[in-house]
Image 1 (tube, helix red, strand yellow):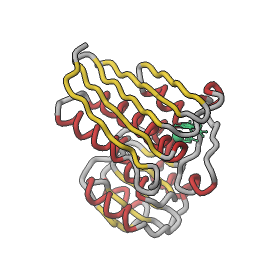
Image 2 (tube, chains in turn red, yellow):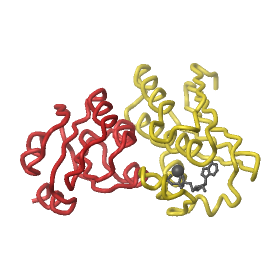
Image 3 (cartoon, helix red, strand yellow):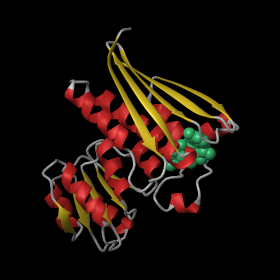
Image 4 (cartoon, protein in one colour):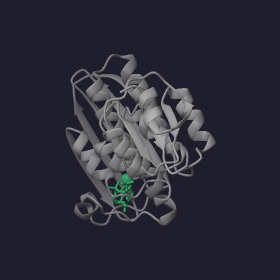
Length: 104
Length: 140
Ligand SMILES: Nc1ncnc2c1ncn2[C@@H]1O[C@H](COP(=O)(O)OP(=O)(O)OP(=O)(O)O)[C@@H](O)[C@H]1O
Ligand SMILES: [Mg+2]
């Protein structure tokens, strides 16, 4: 999947768009659980909104973050995603609906 | 095994909004010297968990990374409150994190289990009131 396909399927807005390919999907909010289970290269759906989200994405090699439920991204999170080349999208969909759209 | 590179970091215990800088620097260094991607991911995640634990549970500490021909050793030492029951702390889901810390996404009680999962060997020495030393080894 490309990040543009993810964006379209989720009716998402792009804060940062990077061309890193997307392999797999993970949904969750607790950072240690994400680092335990999220596959490398995935898109991560969450409502967690602080700069550590980008830190975790860098270290766990997550290529894109989608903030669900209309969460407005924190400024530091935007800056860090931009600096690290991690895509950052926002969608009004809840996490379940977003998963359904990415899974079908 | 003779040491090729040694990295040392002071980990600030004040700021849990912006943390993980030592682990990110180690990641960059490992990339620049051509360590395999799989090992880099394991070291990055395990060290980050240890670094964050020093920040949120021990008011900071120091991290040392020793890169040798056949392995990488990460040592995280603090003089914080220590861990009373290490077996309990190692269980998935056990956490003493406050609500304020949970709101930042930490406190799932998965950090120590992740450090075990992603390292090739892990040792914890801790004394209540004195501090904690975690040693993580990764084979190359
Ligand atoms: N360096 C440390 N000093 C003192 N206590 C610690 C230290 N590291 C871990 N602990 C204790 O062990 C518990 C479990 O640690 P662990 O990293 O597994 O979970 P957590 O930090 O609470 O949550 P998570 O890592 O999932 O964000 C902690 O809640 C804390 O009580
Ligand atoms: Mg932890």
